[in-house]
Image 1: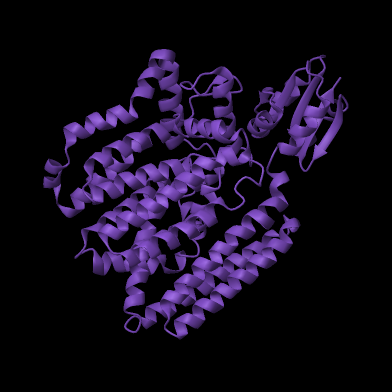
Image 2: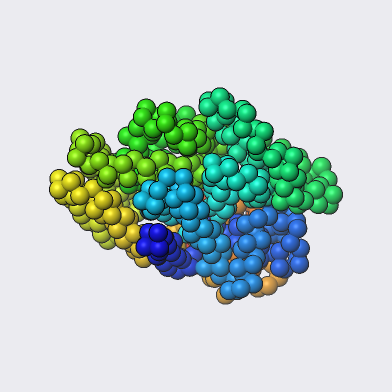
Length: 511
């Protein structure tokens, strides 16, 4: 047990924490979750989240509180903003490891944990200052606790999930458990779930902040938080380009890479062979499928939304690979199918990276290194499959993805960081600002600019609002992207002096 746990922990900590604070916060999401806790200290208000000095009802405060605590420990920095996600990512791996060890075996626990931490989307989001890992941990602990009949923990973490992301914190666990009991025809289990005590526990952990916020802010809080940020986002697209029924199919194929090479086989086996003898497999499949279907139906789609389905998928794949390793002679054809699928998926992904160099040629060196690493991964997996050393093939993929995680934060992200961060233009602004004139910032750049410049500015939501702001005669500064600048009329551009240009971002002065 100790060897398995420590091997998982060392690899997990390395993958997640390596170079955590080296890359600037990436627009627009990371700066939002870094700026709000900074303003909690500025206004000495840890109840009502704010951004740019205004009350902001987008998310509950759990992640803001964690980042605020991190700032207290380490000071305000990129590392501090990302530290809670990284730490909770490690905790999520531990939660999977210990629960799966109790439910299945130590081998399945180790493989499942390492599959999860080396899947691209999971370890990328553990390195990002966003709320997704916090929600993923809470939902994972809640649902694994249900599987182990630890019902008090189930209610506590459903409450914490609600404090992290809102209604889905209790809707998801409730719906998944209901569908499982329905499919398993086991509603008698409700008698054992300690529901009255559970409701009290859920209320204690999940509801006090909502009650306080309603007392402080009344209907605007309910209308904005519940009405817009939950109901409206589900029924109306915030990002129209993402309203595609198949949106999450490529997201899953890439986000769960390189384990998508065995994902379909693992799910199929769990449904056709295992579930009749193991109700845990039925529950895991319902868990993963519900998350995928729910967000596929939702009109607002973001890549990170399906992250909570990765832990059950990792466990399903872990069970499959452990069984494959144990019975490798019997299932040699399945092993070769794994190798073929891995070759096809990796080849397509490498081809996509090289095609993408047309848009981002600065990634060339990093892409070449990644292609080499993944090429060696394919060769290693095929060699060990041929030799029927399937555990060595699993370790080859784990090692390759650990190396890839290093390349990601030492070569790929640094090469394009300034294109996706406002840090450079904000620092340029600080050297040239007269400390008096109004500042206008285009919406996409606003969170990063506020975080790095320590100036809120007035937000411009569109090129039309930029044109209106130029109509006055007052001296003012503008922080925009090149696309907004080019969209101005010639006479409008003539009013502006370009003070600085960093990548596609511009600092302008209207005298």
